[in-house]
Image (cartoon, rainbow over all chains, first blue to last red; front, side, top):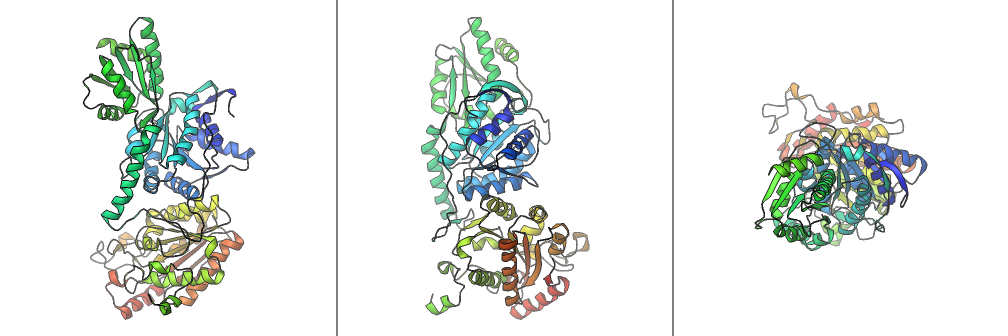
Length: 345
Length: 242
């Protein structure tokens, strides 16, 4: 599929990417706006008999079936949204504890509850910090159909290389929007190996420990691995920031609108730039802290109340640059709105 | 551990994890011993992967000399379904209690049977949530006192839950479904063998409910435990159901 030019949706891009990443099994349950990922995978499996799937009884089972396949050494994944994402936190917490390379594609929808089936950026918290743990999960946020393709491939490689659960966040607009894309596969696939190795010395996988101390050692190792690898995992885009006096900080499709806003404002000789985290967890803190002191003000735009802002502000702690939040929970943000809100300041 | 004692154990048991951590008199020990002998006799130790549930079942995490994965409560069935789809040539065994199988994980159990996923499920029914201290389970019979049915289980909480009879209704025609008891270890072993063979030869779903004893939470001695078990066997009929 790589290097071909075509018109596809974000959900179709996710399917192509999962195939190109070497995934062999998808488990899923239909949910708007992610359903086309399951449908697309099933359609692909009609022609390619190496691709398997199971439409499970719920997302919880989809997630645990993913775990069953992963420990057997096969790249499996799931895709969901909103309430389905909530159910997936059960298996993903287990994957986080056992360091399983669990890949989830989430097309965010409005919440809480069933909310809307269209759009939001309100699943950042759930993906990054959901479950009864400390959030050792890698979370990518795609801002275009092309990037959805690239990041899904990247997610499989990151998951299998570093062994942390890995998400790719999109949204209803990105999932359903069809655009002309030229797909290019960024990296070579990492091969999957069985975790239950079927050797003479058995492998025991458990996530239940009888003492705080014995579990504390497991967590300490996981946290150490997270800390030493997160600088290698983080990705961000800095756009026209070098001479900027003002920056926008945004992720996902809101960052696409922000980029357009930067173009328009630049044409009016305003020195505006964009900092776009591609990983919202872990965050490219080094880059953020390089850029912030050089600008007079930073504006965070997001389609949630403050899920993304909390991450940014925590990582920017101690810097003096004013950071203004522009939240619009569960609603889309246009470039015109961004410009209007910034000019009002 | 003396060598003599080790000879009394199934060969596929991990002797380093013995004595096991179940309470004295627990029916899991009897069940796992017969499971061990069944695996020894079928010579499938190197072909089998075990998934175990939360609750007392989790104490099986290093019980055997083959790969074992401990999952979340009620999630052993879908985990082993996913394992089997990825590795069709391996034997997938799911081990759980009655809470895991009939309450929180019932949906997955039913759908695995409905789809005829070729896995073997062993469910140990001791009529209570034992690891958390003996709360009412779906399988708890009416009038039985537990910490969450202090006046005896009322009928509004349902009667004792007959799992195999339920599963039978939606299972594939090739499924093997039975109820057996720790009061009959030899029968228990032969049923486990039959269930495993059903997975290996017929590539079909199989399900064994094992009626078991829980002296700690029942607050019974050995004789009283088996007396209550014989009463259970009247309410929960033994034998092949499908």
